[in-house]
Image (cartoon, rainbow, N blue to C red):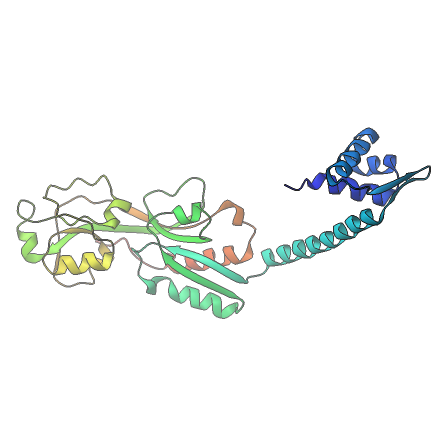
Length: 280
């Protein structure tokens, strides 16, 4: 692995022309400079500096090293400028993870308005039940339904959302002794400790759409976001205490200074504040 300190010492010697001058630039003892340059030359097997009474003069190989360092410095300066400018601009590609509990019409208009206003910005969306993608830095912003947000993330709750156990009317009349319970990914994410008095069917329904279809077809009862259950005729609420969760807009603490991330989080928060999901 490259030891960049070797190059830092070589650049200082080339700039100052003497060991003492390089030591002053680096804030170290002159003997440290001598030792590091000797070690660097031994590691490479070539002489980088010619010693004379006037100081140290780069050899042909030394001039190649110094020239390469100058080019690297310019590249890094351009990169730093671009990074700083990028942090201030609303541009680039952002990744948004969204809870499958939330229907697209709740947040897509806000994304369209944001990207229309900032043509250099694009947002890709993927469904996730938890904050794991954000914690792994695989997402820039998350719009999630959680009972509690992870402490290491930053963001805000933008409203509550209620859940209820629902079944088709005929199945509801058989609750709980003769009505099957349909486990789901939603239940595992929102209410893993929910105590259900009915017999559970095998397997787990992986989407809210499947839950709505299965319950509507009379296959059993399941935990649903109430606002979505009310959109389907024929689903009856069952006498089962169910939790309430919150809708969170979250990002990573490192993104506090990123204009694009903050713009996306703000647009989502504004959109969701006007939506009533805590219904019953």
